[in-house]
Image 1: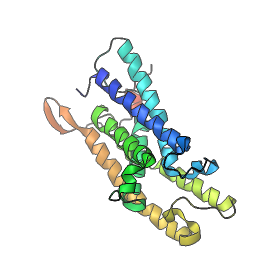
Image 2: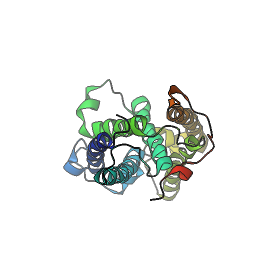
Image 3: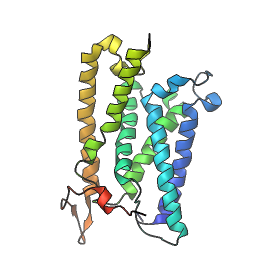
Length: 237
């Protein structure tokens, strides 16, 4: 079932639809759950929104490649498009999901589940994308450095917020743990280091899942040639 390209395609079409809804809602299209205020440039200061845009772009690219292979008559296989970047995006959107759950909002409140925005860009799109990686990505394809590469996008975001905060008067920081005005650069850096540590561990847990599979007829962890890069195994076509 995991190798069935038709099953993968159906799943990914649903993922693209949910992800597209998340993108629309981030721009406050329909004003759903946004208090009726129009979108502004500040839409682009939120990690949630930016990570969902990356998820949508990667999902579309993977789905198009999947559809082309099905149309060519292929019925089994795995994604061959930007596999390392897809893994990086998986960790990126996992940050969105877990930070919102544990630091910003409580899923125990009814408002969380009744807000279509929360449900799309905080819950459904992240989980569907993470599950796509868990369920359908080929085993044993990721470099041991992939979880470290996955820190690049979140750290770029932190630098981006620092730049905005330093260049815009009375800048309102999007998250309390990045608020230099309240915590100072030292306090923010401590938060960032803590989050980096947590998500490095989560990245390596996902990497271990990628390394666990059926090899030689037995289920085991495959640690052979772990330093190889995905690039060397991708189809250049």
